[in-house]
Amino acid sequence: MILEEKFSNFNVLTWFITSKCNFNCHYCFATSETRSKLKEKPEISLVDIERGFDSFKDNWIIHITGGEPFIKRDFIPICDIISKNSLLSINTNGCILINV
Picture (cartoon, rainbow, N blue to C red):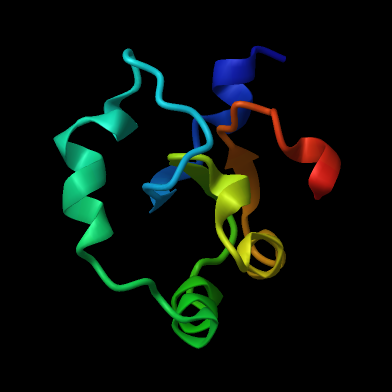
């Protein structure tokens, strides 16, 4: 089966979960104005995240990006919440995976 056919019925949501990162790559959009604007925003509570993602049912792929998602304090509980009803994709630089 062609990959496009397998996932063609899915909705995709990309969530910029944090602006924090352990790198400062010049090519990354997270180091631009986006990061400074996001630092001003309050973080969403786990209760609100769970309430929001409980309404997501089948056919969702949630793509988490950032900065570096694994830096976020409650990242693992967030992944647990999302993966109950959706497929999960994580964009990471991979440098701190050993600590997870």
